[in-house]
Amino acid sequence: DTGVSQNPRHKITKRGQNVTFRCDPISEHNRLYWYRQTLGQGPEFLTYFQNEAQLEKSRLLSDRFSAERPKGSFSTLEIQRTEQGDSAMYLCASSSSETQYFGPGTRLLVL
Amino acid sequence: EDQVTQSPEALRLQEGESSSLNCSYTVSGLRGLFWYRQDPGKGPEFLFTLYSAGEEKEKERLKATLTKKESFLHITAPKPEDSATYLCAVRGAYDYKLSFGAGTTVTVRA
Image (cartoon, rainbow over all chains, first blue to last red; front, side, top):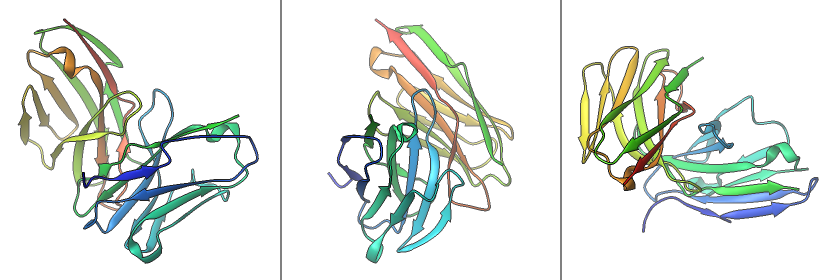
């Protein structure tokens, strides 16, 4: 399967801890996106990379959130000092044209 | 700011009972309208991209149509395996992000 992959699939952490998620996009895709989805809502945009450059960040992305895409390949999303409000599904997508293809997501629960 | 509103929030259908889902949108320069299917606990699965008013696309029992203000997803003779949440999203002219609606959850009973 050459789709978008995300790890871990599930993460439970205590409030105040740091967590890091990884996304491996479809190999030939140069654009990579992070979204957050809470129950009953559609995904909300967080940030976007073209190759290794982070070109757009949402106002939702507080200074506790940081994302990287070294060498334009995989990407990581780190959340520092997690809060209960960070509990959500974190989705990664990639594209080479208009259509974005999503991974299975990482479900985060902050206790 | 781009806005997407989907209706109804939930739809319960009998197997074989055709219906339509609505997606109303406002966007600065539509670059694409997208439909995705999402099963519980999984990521959205791409269905269709529509680019301009009047365009239609079909896949099995699903057909998507687009006007200047809204899109419809028609489900013809649905089966229980069509049960899912259907998400609509738009991309505007000035950025690459997708703006999603809250989705319509479809349940098809045998």
